[in-house]
Image (tube, rainbow, N blue to C red; front, side, top):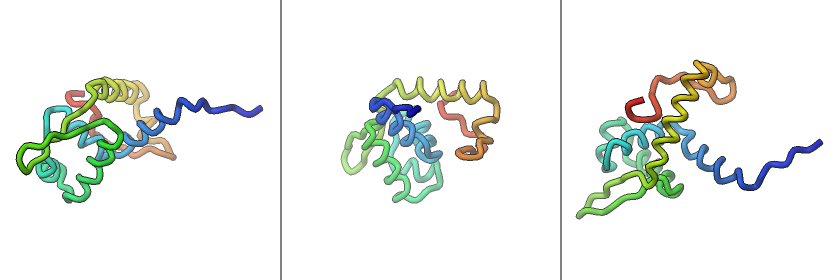
Amino acid sequence: MAISIAPGLAPAAALFRSLGDSTRLAILRRIASGEVRVVDLTGELGLAQSTVSKHLACLRDCGLIDYRVAGRQSFYALTRPELLDLLRSAEQVLAATGEAVALCPTYGTATDVPLAPGA
């Protein structure tokens, strides 16, 4: 018996793929605490400007962040405050499953970086 996958799941899968990178999660966690510039992120994360810009573009293309221009600077911010609830919920799932997700042979990598600020 074949199981059909509901077509409505594709957007959710795309959302989780956009969140499936530790650098993007770190960027979102930082942006959650307030507007940020690329130069701020490069210094705080120790990454090249091109790397940070690539991840910001991904998050922006997914509609999770946007920016405002002030002079020659761009300030990035979350577009959806509900994203913080999603990240907090993920932290609760991770806490409830112990290290099972981190130790998953397919996707797991043990980290100690919480997804949501204050988590």
